[in-house]
Image (cartoon, rainbow, N blue to C red; front, top):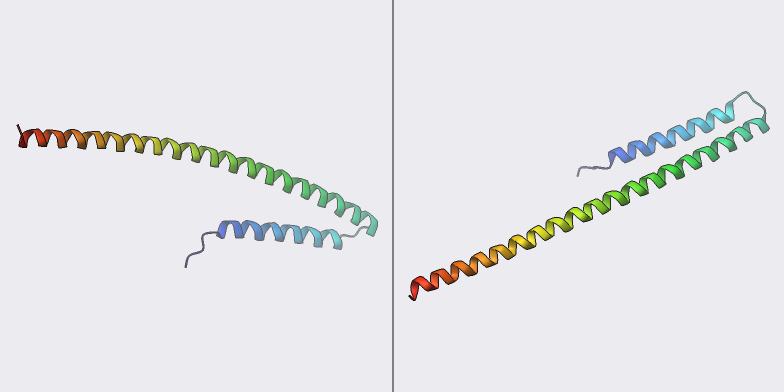
Length: 104
């Protein structure tokens, strides 16, 4: 069975690796403990804000995509409904034409 979510898995793995590497680097940096913790807290707050911003942007893009997809589907359903109605009218006309030929 083929797995089609490889892109998301790769992106998630890269994000986890980046955060892990960042945290490891911050804890092993040759600075004092208080300074390192302050830097780490500031960086984590920045990362949290960027993550929230990305999620908001993703939500907005997803909603826009859903709305445009919904509109396209409604438009196609309307066209299909009109085509079915025209086909029904054509069938009725042809049936009446055949009956008129059989019973002049």
